[in-house]
Image (cartoon, rainbow, N blue to C red; front, side, top):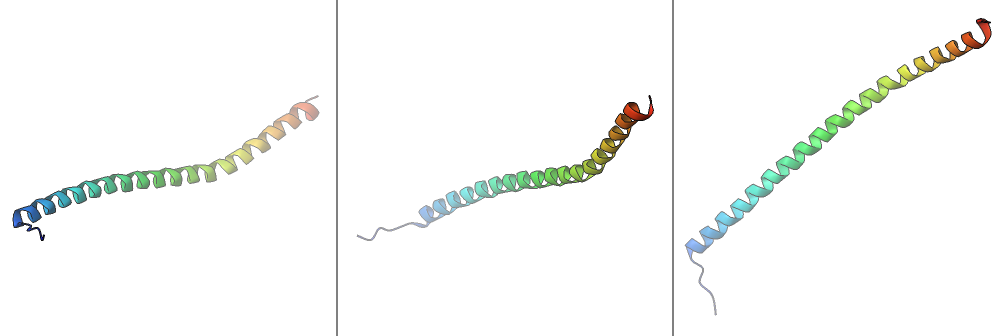
Length: 75
């Protein structure tokens, strides 16, 4: 009824479990690296957004002045 498990079988199971853990660890490192890269990309996009807002305002004001100049004062 009780099945005898040898040391060799235990060792083989341990080795297979270690292999699985190593593969999971490697996959986890890849996923972590991907998330870190995405985080960096979002930081860059946030900075670009903060820079773009004042530039768009300045461009809009300059465009409005140019339109007013062409329509009213240049006549």
